[in-house]
Length: 303
Length: 258
Image 1 (cartoon, each protein chain N blue to C red):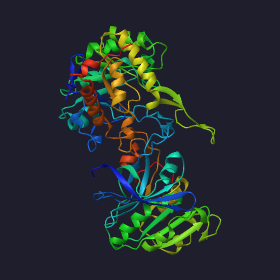
Image 2 (image 1 turned 180 degrees about the vertical axis):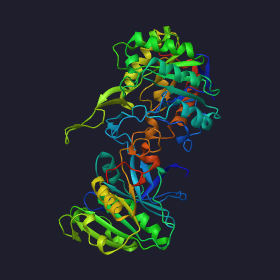
Image 3 (image 1 turned 60 degrees about the vertical axis):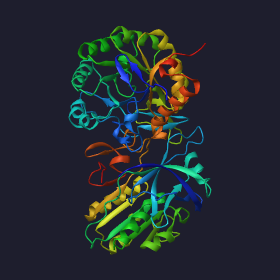
Image 4 (image 1 turned 90 degrees about the vertical axis):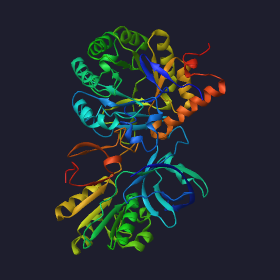
């Protein structure tokens, strides 16, 4: 049994496997399938200052080895989260991390402030990269200036671990990552979904109500892996890798590329128990290769 | 209800017309309890074009035989793969998912079950449960032509069956809402599943007749457990997940223009 412990700045994780926001609800939806306490962390659904209804149906299109979604940050708002959801998740041993979204700097700050006081939420993941809502954060996430502005403002209001989730829909993701680091982020997570589109040729209409949506799933993994590798070299803060991770081998590839932890997203829809299997699979890999600790393989890619 | 991920064994795959199959599945141990109207998600990611599980409603669950029946319409690569399964093959399911139909509490209730196309699937199990409870279910089943009618003999074992076809080849000609039984008899509870225009028409008729009505929706799903928020239906309480809050809804909750 290898030592699976890793950390994101001062946040210690029992192992590097977390769940990606929007794919795992609040964790409790998957409690019949996975022992949540076996996971390093659960990143819960994107939370905004106010209640959001999200986009109209249809919100999802399956694509080869992937899918598009256009949910649009449907959630009941941060106050509802604090009052009704937090009490149901706060006693898990796994790290419960809240994904925070917004459309204005002051909304991000107000949401982060409210979560800052929740004792058992040790970190937030700041979503500056949602492609599915107008000013859904991606406006901040596609320029270094925008990223620095929102990260800097939240940093002043939030004193626990601040992870910033980056958009791949940019020319140079390392530039945005460096801006987030410079503004005080403790970590960056990447990649959010890739902007895509699906058309129903028979009906001559877009499949999604929003025309475009965010692509995820195994098809995006090579892009995500490349970006994680580039960003891990460009910043000195820890990187959280995600994008198409479906099994332990995928997860290990991200760790080798420089990620200190990983998130599993769309794969939860294919196998709701996959996250537990990935934890076991990483351990098996470490044992098989004679590594005492998962830290030994972080960034250990030989070129 | 606790949900399970189970590898089930195929007993038999039976062709039902040209566009559907009946999958007869069993398990080594006893299958978990399932309610009429609930569904399963079948893992079908055998080709690059298919990644997500396919939500399929429970056609029947026979506890004594430990058998789960799925009536599957062949729509795309996922369902066509399911049709290639042979006796002895293994298939992975998540089950049971969603909420079922509300079973009547009053023994005098006269239930009407209206189905169209492959939407008849969950009505068989519902009819079986109703019959077990002492009710006499009436089925009203519609399709475009005689070729799309499914499992009629099975429905006849459970209750009275009335049929409409748009071409008039079997039963009365027209839509289910035009069948004469609706004018001749009284019903107290309607359950319906099928193409959305049919369900809307049935809901409109039920509302007009002052009869309680539940519909089973089949919005496109990903997770099946209320996590991804992809399959939402616009209701009077806002967007809710069909997979978790449904797939069965009272028409009073929906925002349909009826």
